Length: 79
Image 1 (cartoon, rainbow, N blue to C red):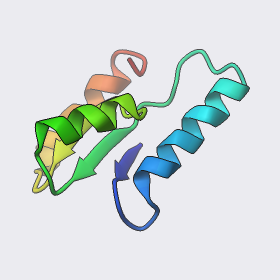
Image 2 (image 1 turned 90 degrees about the vertical axis):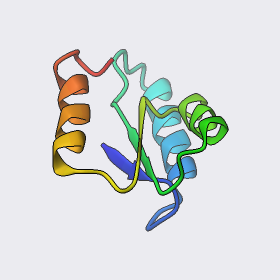
Image 3 (image 1 turned 120 degrees about the vertical axis):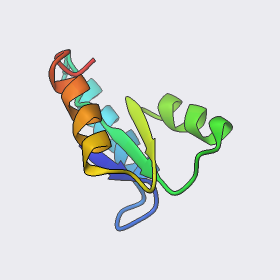
């Protein structure tokens, strides 16, 4: 999924909750989650990735960029 970090649901908490749910159920292949933010800060990006995101895009983005990112996870089985 594509997850905004702040709205409408606080993205960090939503991602942690989803990862916990997957872990509790023994999900072998976690759902890819792409962080979508208005910020391009490298340190913040690293923090997001360690919070369970599998990718990151900074706004503004183009439709082509989003499709390319989603396709990259779809074509690799989510990894």
